[in-house]
Every structure is written in structure tokens, then in C-alpha cells.
Length: 114
Length: 114
Image (cartoon, rainbow over all chains, first blue to last red; front, top):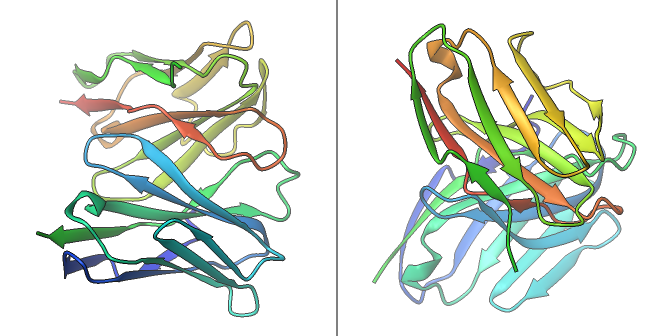
């Protein structure tokens, strides 16, 4: 079953604007990860944030995690047309015995117009 | 270096036929995962391997689905007596298997059952 719910389902912005995607989940987690998927391709890992972390940065990406609200957000600053893709959050459940198994959300489709 | 390789990239089969999907993980990765992605949807977990063992098969939808891994490397996902609802992209991912490492995905096999 899917754990993550992502919001919005689709987002269209102009190049140079910021894009914010949100993810909510239901059960306790060990960590939360964000992945990107270009059309017809596999997923590519972007960033991992652990349950004891609140914010993490990687280049133009900023991820926040609020475990009290069971939610995370991904901010892409100064977006580019090449950022057009689907973005998925994935949770590593706290009870999964460290198998590395991730539960994915439904994804947000981002379109960045040049 | 070589990433995760999946074959075939596309497979069209008739309802009722059996299909085999292959995954070559990154060399040295002990953990291997199969996921299924229906059109425009998130990823549905199918099965997890650690070495040649499958400690978590909880996502396999029915007994028509099976998977094996040999030599701690190549994995095969077999679907018997395919049904139209089996049509989806089947994604394989691998990781070093130590703790919560990011998953490395292949480009998937697009299965169409007619």
C-alpha cells in the first residue's frame, strides 16, 4: 500500500521560479528520500533526510521534514526547463527492520516552461 | 560505471502467456528490489532480495508472480498466465545493502498484455 501522499499532483511554473512539492506520510519513519523520474526512465535519487534531521540542502534543492506533522517538502530554487520531471517522496519505515525497502508516494509532475 | 540494467526494455505479450523480466544490479550490491509502476502512478513494492534470499515478498500481487536471484547478482521476475491488469512498468533497483542507502534504479521493462 502507498504511504506517501504528494501535493500537488501537477505543477507548472516558469523558468527561474521556485517549485515546492509536499509529501505526507502515515507511519513512523527512519528516513525520507526524494527521487526524480524523467519520462520513460528509472528513478534517480536526489536527497535523503533522516528522522532526526529537520532540513537538508543539496545544490538548488532544500528538503524539510516535520515528523510531528508527518510531512516533508522539497523546494527547487531557480528552476530550469531541465528540471521538468516527476518527483517522488519515499519513506523508509521505522519498523521495516532496516531492509532498505522504501514506500513511495504517487508523485508530483513538474513542468518548467522556458 | 555500469548502472542497473533491465531487459527487455519493452515486452508485448498475449493474455495467458508467461513472461520473464531480467535485472542485472550494480556489481557488489547485495540488496535488490522489484517495484511496479502503473501508468501515471507511484511505485508499488513487489519483493526484496538480500543476497539470494527474499526476506520480504509481501508485495507480490498473486501466486502468478515469482522471482529469484542467483549468485547474489541477476534476478528474474516471472509472471505466469499474464492478465491485462499486469500491464505496467516493472522497475528493478539495487543498493549496497548496508543501512538506508539510496536505491539505484534501472530504466524498467514496459509490459503490455493484449
